[in-house]
Image 1 (tube, one colour):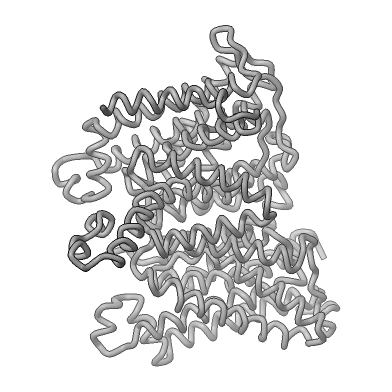
Image 2 (image 1 turned 90 degrees about the vertical axis):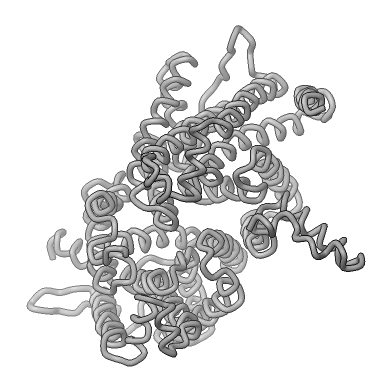
Length: 286
Length: 326
């Protein structure tokens, strides 16, 4: 397999992970106007929890689902107990979520120490798979498939169900949605938990590729930010396209300009900010 | 009376090396002062312009790194200071152009992302920044032939810079420019309708903030004789923001009190507990929940409420200061 193909596969894999991470971030930001800076922590926490669950004897997928649920519960608590009191005060929300992310990072450092932990690839997917006569690492392929499946499911949820219609109404005009009898407050909690679950789950399935280590949260958070700025907040399609762009830039940048890979990542964001500040698929603010 | 208090404060500050006892405390005092310089610089944006930045450690770091590189290339201190400040101003202009594409939460996000870019450069562009190992320098400048090598000397130099800054801030706040910056914070639309160029006013405020951030970065470099990606990390930006917010935004002394609080807590806390980051996060959360207007006004409000609870309800009818302002 040629170098370029390897890079392309890795890019799609990373893009898939980033999509899971940023879709939740984008929804939370789009619906609740909460800039959730604990989102990177959710990702890291999910991976750490799963590592412990797997060590306790659970299999990979059960651990992934369960640790996602734990992270979602944690997110729900944050939303109910803290962010709820600060509705509308964006600066306060930034500070609280930032403060929480520091606390989570420190607790993780204490519990799981500073050494990187690698989550083992599930046995069934540790080999290679051949598609169209070419062989790929099966696990990376699986991540891409999962990401696509989630993209479709989220799209169906938002676009085809009553709940999705209510969420979209909440994004567009929360006050009007309330008047129409939608319990926006309950939606907020639901969306926040969903976003947290996605981030935690992404952390777990990213574990075999990225490993888990202190600082992973602050590495992933800016990536999610870039994706959302690129794609436009509240837009699922924007998250998907943004994630793929970032995934490709990161891997190809890493291969071609190793010292500047991290900077290359931000260039399209800067470009988008200058040319189209609302993001590629964001709507013009009213 | 005011001048008397001012003079007394000056004397007390200038005499710090004589009454605090050991060199350790003199160094802490120097740290408080250069972080106060940094916090006051951020306060221009966060407090007066209403633009919350989470990327200022990037500018702080650019000044420190530029200074370190210039110094190690063999330039004199005058060139180092001028070059580092020029680099910081150019970077600030660039940052401002990008960040001012958004306001409110957009501004926060963009500054955060830009700050992370600078961190990425500091951490990964090893041929420029020496990566994680950082850059060491040797030698502090000797303005007017006075060496700053000893801790008290360095303290006095930092104090001088700090006093110049706080004086310039007092002038800025009282000036028409300061008033127009506050105007763009409170009523951007009306300011635009009145014919003010809101973007330009914010841009200039960013430059002013960037300049003093650069000064603080240089002081940091000369104090530590070392700079590493840690100085540029998101934690550093957050700490600086905490200084401003904990002390009280849009006040002259609030950020100074906040800087003192954070630096002292950090050195005290790190002596007793190893988990400073946890404490930092907890303080953030506590301040936002319990005293959103800052620690100094917040403590006053909570104190009054406690007093009012003990007394008959006559005085409780009067709204406390902090609440009236909100």
